[in-house]
Length: 131
Length: 187
Image (cartoon, rainbow over all chains, first blue to last red; front, side, top):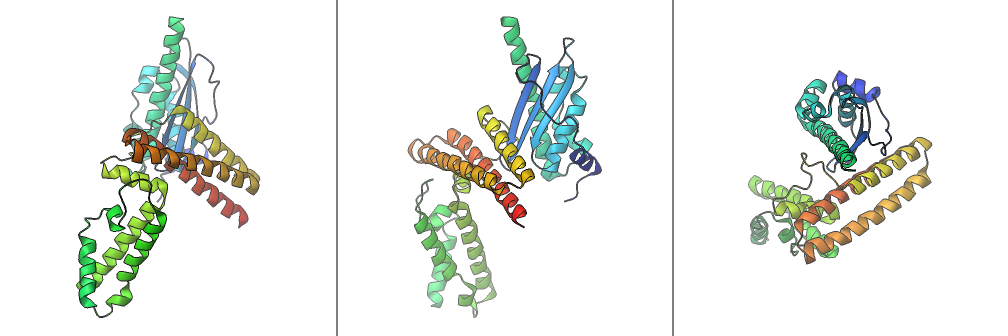
């Protein structure tokens, strides 16, 4: 199966690979997995005091499409509010990367990783306010 | 001979494709592998093309379909992960549904650590490290299979069984990748 140029670009030059300090109260972590293909994806976002995502990092073990999907969303996330981030749909990721139908689940994985990271940061913030 | 053959094919077709029934096994996670093996060989020999040299093309086709079905059923039941996934599918549960990406956090962290070790060993061409990782993962798979035994056959807890099955499929995938890495380094 041929990958699109955009997938290849992200796969060969993945953006924002790495981690952030998971103990930082302004950092949210999302981890998801897809047993069918053995993919596992970790996405971390750092939110500044203005409520904007100022940094995003990912680490993905999986196929080229899964790596490209997570690399792409780290680019998209920067500068967004967490609510805007939460609204990102897998269909937008799949469309941008021209993913074939059999690889749509990779974009689902990326969307779910964002949602998990946002849920984590919201839980952390709620805990901070309660304290 | 001819009658017997017809009877055999008919009786095979009438098991309505349930893999367990096909091999005369109880529908459970814990199965007797030697019974599976024995029944599989029996079917393969009964529908072997050599027996159908003079048969009609319809009979030949039917025999071939039975051989394919038996092979697929055997491969599915032989391994714990695919057997568990198949058992769940009989209860209309899809363990590897693509829209379900939530896994327990501790398992994902463990999964990430295994993947990192695999990548590091691959980069260092460290076969001993890969084999050690494979051993560790086989132990984890063994524990999960024991858990599945309890969940399916004693507690009939299909929800927990689905989670454990997903973990086992994950582990099998990494084991497959470890073996690939070892082969690549050895080449």
